[in-house]
Image 1 (tube, one colour):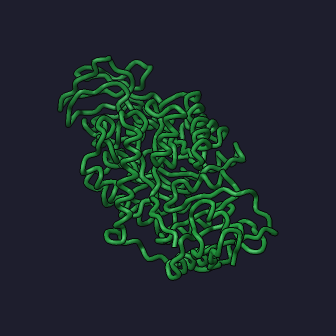
Image 2: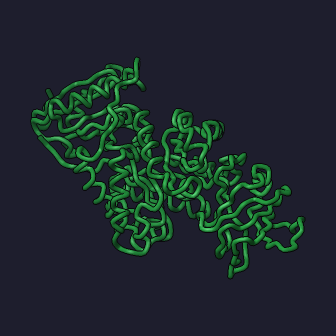
Image 3: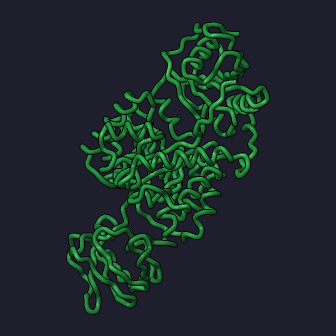
Length: 490
């Protein structure tokens, strides 16, 4: 039997100044990159257009179907522009937060005036109450609201420190009325749809309506239908994720803001809970933030970082993500290579250290029943691979939900749909010419698997397909197919 341990957990890498050329992106792909993330919190439309085109060309040059994930900024809770030297705040200092670009209206007697982003000042002053907490710079400084005079807020520092321009703000325990999609996000989304990004990540998702709003914007403005990935970081989403999981195409566990909002000590358990829920529903999940943070400036990771990546694999994540490590760090290629090696080692021991939920098919779902059965049959007969003939990729995503030991190969005639599998656990994609109903399907599958080194003579393949129509959503057949020799089929 043809065997090879191929990595099943996918790697998402953020592009930036350290990885902004076609040549460097090709090197990242060869190192193990599966999905390229474009972070729209930074960079102009011209920059992102160039990165998108470089990814597409690099994918062609390497023969890989690399997905592009557009990550929208969302409502940026941040300070405005301060003096270059910053401001040193002490515990007990009283601070007036006012909209950037205006003059403070409240009394400044005994207070330090600090501007905040004008677009958030009004909504925040409506949401905050006396006693609410505001944290700055990833939680390094903290304060308590003393008075609210919309659109201005008076706070008292509880933990001081030096603060500088554009530092982030967090409001743990305060539900926010800010929309998750700003005017900037809608303009950025328009560019993403024009380019043809494969997925769009939404920041600060709180409720299913946030996801549905963006889906409606896409429907109104384009025939292109990227996947929607909901970033889970706000308290509202963490503690009520069920509705979001029902309407989203994937989630991203954004552990940075989550840790500031809820406390770092809660993040490991939240990560396990979200991954387990996503696995059970067959919703792809990306684990992100500081996975190999030290590799921004060091060629090797810490032991804790290696453990973090491995534990995400054991938890059942579909993908892991690099941020500054690949975007602006000194060792972007080494970071991807390191992540790939850690995943490979963890997957070699996954049966020992991981307990995947024993799922059963959704009652009444033919595709669920077919793919669940395919995973069991492949294991029983010792198949070298499970080949899914699929138009949309739904069959391959459904099969991945059952986490078969046997490799999954999605055979597809639509490259856009194929790329959307780039952050789904265990799925490899093979692009073929358009399928027609008269094709010798099993002969074609055998030929494709041999040509792509996914099978050898006499191997067993488990094939799932829709017969005879090859129409969408018609997966209804499983066949155990033995490869006889090149050019022959059973």
